[in-house]
Length: 267
Image (cartoon, rainbow, N blue to C red):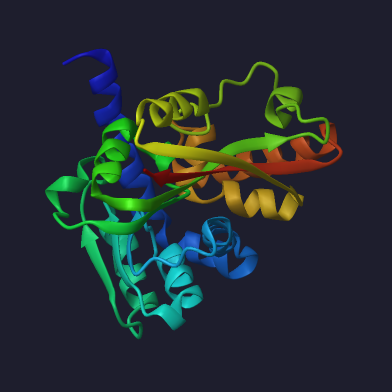
């Protein structure tokens, strides 16, 4: 087993563990800040006026993105298939979407989509999930194959925290800290999409100012806090996260969260 494959297995196992611990905290964060619904809604705005009937939601988590997609496309009565590796996240997702028609949840590996799906989709969404897949390129290649001609692939990618100048806020406040926002560098994601010649990709930046309260709530999610303090037990991370947020907002007067949307049309 090569180093990259070994890292991928370890990272995936850690992601599944962290997300199994994160289901309740994700929901509490979303009830307060509505971040993930806003990301899904923005993806729909970016593909408008296209209105897909058959959708795949990859890395659906607790079903926030699935619910948002169905809600905003309700007039078109779409069928939405949602996949996630975390059983506890899917239990929350099924509860959230129990009254919705045409929504189906599958527990499975987002890096091996063709093992679960054999029919095509009009649109495939990766809402805040692609950067958690070490073998993201395998997932995207299969997603492209599962798209109908003229179908759309919509990705939201967490770029990190920024100062008003556009500099990385974490590096300003903690110059010696080694911190990676996920398993997938943006340059690698961009290169992968370029290699999929059947896809034509447009990129859109999305940045918004965040408060210390928002930062603490976001970074306190087990799956997020593990990125900052991976070797520390979760409860021990919380005071460290509070201290991190205080220092960051003291050294960077205005902090912005950055996302990038990649909208890819097939054919």
